[in-house]
Image 1 (spheres, rainbow, N blue to C red):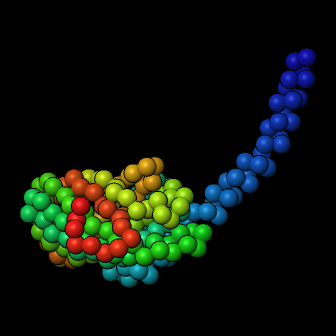
Image 2: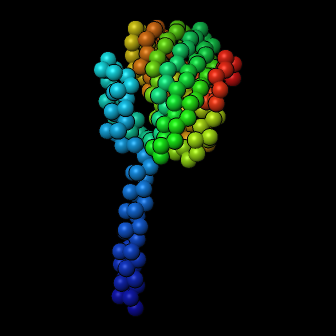
Image 3: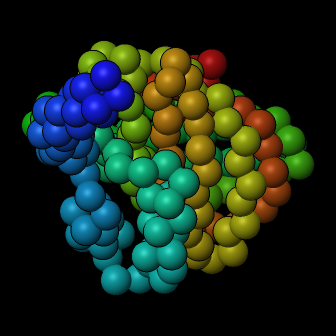
Length: 189
């Protein structure tokens, strides 16, 4: 009887292994690996973004493999209360693409203005239309002439990791959200 249970357990494990490998393979096919993202980020930001590999290593170690990204640009400013406006293209691993816009208010100990290129890693986005919502987050920034930074924002189990390479002078910490919309708007809410 004991051997029968052991043999049954062994057979179930042996049969499950190919299914688990297939599921892992599908996950890898549905997401970007670090090399793919590094090539995209390097081409997008150019050679001037020092520390980019360190930032990507940090994000991949904390969040894993993204299934999409947004390449775009943004500008913002703050004097305690801030605003940010941006636009770009959402590119999914499955080939879907969509033009997106974002804006958002912030409040905190934040002062200055900056313009930046933004490369946003997108995690666990099942449908492209699910991106259109508010993603709250906390941001700390220190730009002086040029700098690269990353923060995280989440909503409905979708995580965003915006990587920004910008110019200007801005420093501080703030709380706000990134509201991604289908159309461009000047209303930051």
